[in-house]
Length: 156
Length: 154
Picture 1 (spheres, rainbow over the protein chains, first blue to last red):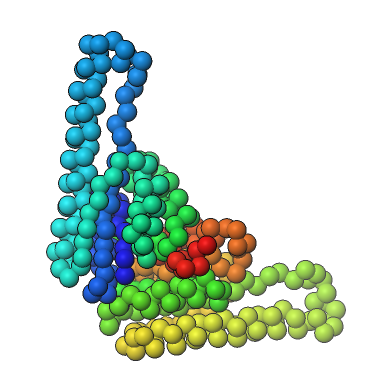
Picture 2 (cartoon, chains in turn brown, green; picture 1 turned 120 degrees about the horizontal axis):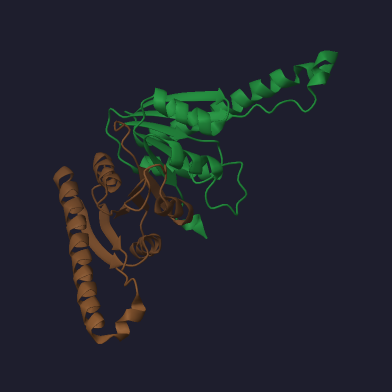
């Protein structure tokens, strides 16, 4: 069974990791843990024509990118560790991608030939009043494979 | 692990049953297979009072729906049992609003997971996600697995 686990480090995606750990998987299962982060944008790109501001912004941007990538790597490795703890026979790979989360997750699922995508009911982006985040909804609607929206019934 | 498997006998719900057989569930897992039929209101309830042959129509309709529902769930039981004989399987056939009955069952059963097809009998095939599946994904308190058959996606 080939599974994509999409995480963003939010509480909701931690539930997805723990719910996946609860499901007994066939021994030859492969899990690809993916984190997608959006490219940190510049607020006022016109300012970049001023030299001093440009160099300042470029520094800010490259710092932000570096930071985003580092935190993304950390998010997937934390998820990988907690899965491995629960089931050491799993074949786990990780991927960190820049882009639009809903699009990258679906593309990864197709490239990986996934049977199942697992993700939390919402992520960082959603207001907590939402019951189902936009990415989860989009994936549930548009994925070509099965989708599991993870929730912990014992919480709240 | 406690699982509610909601099926309506459609092609999509057969995929859900099949997908569930692929997961090697722990032996103490409990699966409740539920089928919900909607009892459509009579188009002309006034006719009932004429005591004509139509009088028995609602009764017969409900009885037949029960029979069809029972055969849908018992087929699913067979498929699941063939894969894993030690599963603890119960079945439910009820009259009601599918999305509501499924959620109520999941809560009373204290389910960890609801398994459904991506759409059912009701949906036009141009829909990518049926209304019941979407409602469950949004409102369930537990995890929801929406099953799609990869091969049939196109």
